[in-house]
Image 1 (spheres, rainbow, N blue to C red):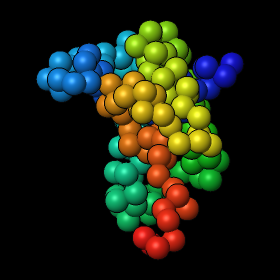
Image 2 (cartoon, rainbow, N blue to C red):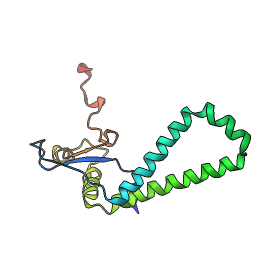
Image 3 (spheres, rainbow, N blue to C red):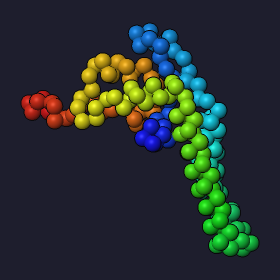
Length: 148
């Protein structure tokens, strides 16, 4: 269950570098069809939400006249279920992709409490992924007091 959860909430993987010394030796990460479908559903709902937000002055008066609260509630619940299914399908697609599992193993092998070793960081640098998942390897408390 832990691996499936990591696949669901894990970062987006863009590129896998074959050799970290030569940046031109790279391969684009190819998600499988389940991951593509889940990402498409999530992206579509995200876009729909933003379009809906900017067109609120147009559709709220019209929607409030013709439909009631429960109709809006049913629509919101339906979109929420669709979003949840999209996230689940994307996670299952990532779980069945060997490249993504190898990436997660490298990412999870880093000890989050300690400063990562150079060897572990070298293995992690083979992947181009969401920056928000990059491990913290600098602590201000490690800087000597005179250099602050």
